[in-house]
Length: 429
Image 1: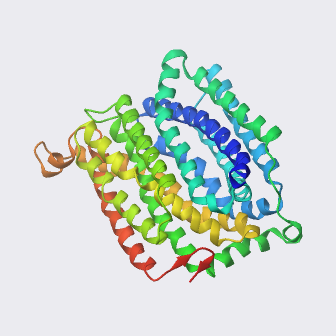
Image 2 (image 1 turned 90 degrees about the vertical axis):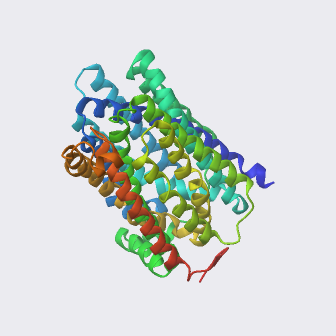
Image 3 (image 1 turned 45 degrees about the vertical axis):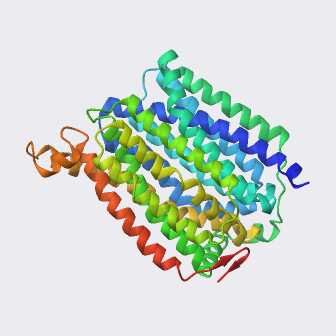
């Protein structure tokens, strides 16, 4: 019976994943377009900064609104407005008028729509998924994200080479239409009682999410842990294209290979999530998987000189991330009351993700203004040149070494703090 109850969620998950693939291809093509046009890691990183800034600033209020709004209508409107921004990009390209600032503004609009949609979709998933399937469906989400990571660079590059960015955007809009019509016509999302929330003032409702987190220190500690990990990861994301597109053995194809390896690793990890039994200690799984990720990939990217080493680093860094995400997801969904999830998830979004735009901005600045000039000033045969290489891209490699150390330290500090907490289904102590 429970498997039959999963059908609406599976329809929602599969079509939304397809739409995310289309959006990912457009984003990938535009990142390449901007970096190859400007050669600046900072300008490229600002794409993500402009996307995440409204997400972080408005998330707390979005959750309070989400708890009182119809989840399905919220998701449909946000999807429609995000698709409209893609149409605007297409029209600007056809008019040969697309500039970097256009992309920043449109990314900010998409970020705002995602801010409102994300808590609504999280609650919708909780309403559609039987509790016994939380871990397996988290594995499915990781699976679709993995396929997106694998297919995005391959399909975007192939479509772009065949018919330009016009075809990439056309595919994006087609996948949006499939997801939009499926949600509109075929999926019914149950609604929880929102009468009490509707009577509350917006600030009062938002504050309740913060109060709930303060009263549940395990959840708050996990969120802060991921906030610091996101800071390191976003610096990584800002530096990766700058290094791989600039290195002597790099280029667009190598960047695609590394991104594909990330996708394959997370795909394999997603399969593990669906096959492995329930762990005895979910907190320990989260701690160990993050430590493994932080202590491997960044150092291999820093010291590696050939694509094979970079690809091995990508696999080691991402293989067990779906396992971490699945256990984190189960803890959150099982611990947060349903009528509070929109508000708590939104507070989580602000606290856990505010470091992402900071990290992207910091990563771009460090590459362009600190590490690349530092490496350019080194003499041939110096220690730094022997470790990180020479020419453009070596500064980004040195930055990977720095964030590798930072990531390991973050893991060790928070893993020590988490040892005092015990967790079981529906019980926090």
